[in-house]
Image (cartoon, rainbow, N blue to C red; front, side, top):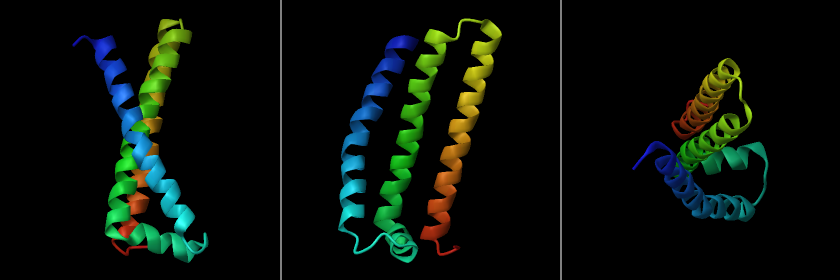
Length: 112
């Protein structure tokens, strides 16, 4: 599979994977007795919830990175600006994903 078609397939697969994860996330939060800090922290601390939340974070960041990459490649025509934008986008997506995963991990392990 060539680069563009592989990119297209991965973006569609991540979109499909996000459907059940988003439904799980919204239904789980809706079923909580409250949205206060202690309740949500307790929900995140449950191992299964932490696992699915981590999975959702990784797939969401990957999907977003792929989408932003397409927009940059389509609309940023200056070679230097294009390369800089792609590099910054990748860095920020990795940083945001790592911060979110670290937060879930800290809550799930009781470090927070």
